[in-house]
Image 1 (cartoon, rainbow, N blue to C red):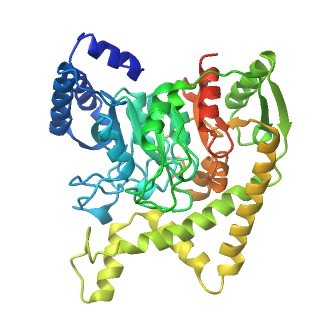
Image 2 (cartoon, one colour; image 1 turned 30 degrees about the vertical axis):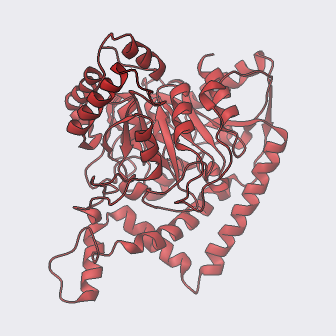
Length: 474
């Protein structure tokens, strides 16, 4: 069978009985085995996926109503929980743990007849930009196995890139869907904060975390968001804003006013081919009659410090629950309760997670709380207001998704500051809560994918999808 790039086409051909849904699932299961060296899946739900395919095939044959995502073979990042399935957040600290419930987003996939094929590798507790921080080893980029996949949802991006499933659910705290999407040449959406329920998402930084979607095309991405977004009684932070029919409204019906941030394109860290590809797209938009203007964002240098102060503080608080007492990994050579806590957390957490917990504990300490945490919250508000001012005049903000294409494995792992700079263009959307999407924008001289990022105002996903689809088809 073909590697499907469109759920609509797959559904049509299944209804025409060109082949069975079981054969589709077997195809993807075989691809996972053939490309096992990429280290994408931590668990493959082979038996369950085939049983679900058989059940849905009977449903189709009987003429019963089918869900919106009928036949969609999808993977989920290993920070999203499903009842009676292992979830580890790619960490030793959750060794042997099985979830007691299913998260809202995952349940909504199942309710609309999607087939979950397995859980996908990631940076430990979603902390990283290369997928090298996993306790289960790095995921390799399918375009070049010597390159990183991006992170933290690197395996979720590679799964789509390599044709191991049709789509993936990842998470995006500071760019963790968009950055790997750019590195792997796929579509990656971070929705408005609160657009999707976080119930069933293992928390890293609660005021930043978003469940995101990776896919080959815009239409599938839009349809998945349509299914999983919306009010949820289990999450007090989720929005009750109406969920539009995103996939049915992908037509761009007006000329747009588009901003690009001057400082992003003048950055010395920006790879020349990415700059050229971005400018080329901006020039094309001008040629199509859209108004494209340069804007200056005065607070670009404050984005990463604000993000890392606040997210490490929230991580320090959220990860305190992983203590070796109630579930997960517990050190064996303990002498008392204190040593059990210390050794379990020391042995169970990886280096990057421990680094961020310690940084977060420091900024929350009594002596430094006002100097760091309180100031960062004030700067976050200023950045949000400044971004809102741009959206008051423009429909979208365009910038590169990443400063470089996928870098070689091991080159930045020992330099956290350099690794953190990978998020320089993506964190703004998380700091302010706006939706943003990365779409493919050509390749560099090494034939590695380049990503283009588009940001929109809060709850403007319908317009964002339409514009992104327009650009992808240009």
